[in-house]
Image: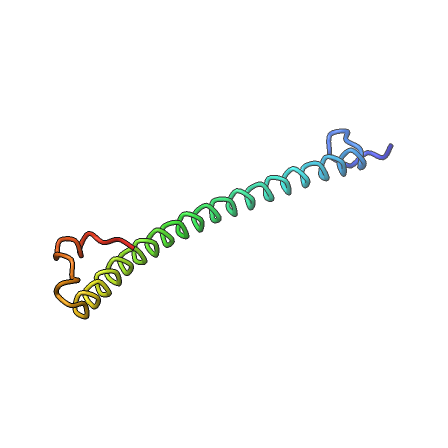
Length: 95
């Protein structure tokens, strides 16, 4: 076995194996860190998408209520008075 000068009796092969293991461990740690950062980023994106979806849902509901009131008003304007329900019933109509 060839001894490395000044390496405390460790052979070149042992040194290479230790270097290889150290390199693999550092590589695995690096990959783990990257995966963790990606996971955090994906969670933040998912949270933002959920917030945006809730906002859009709220806006759609608001538009739906306004459209409902708009068309109820149009129907009220075109129906003869004998067919028109009282005003409190128009506000409570849901499509």
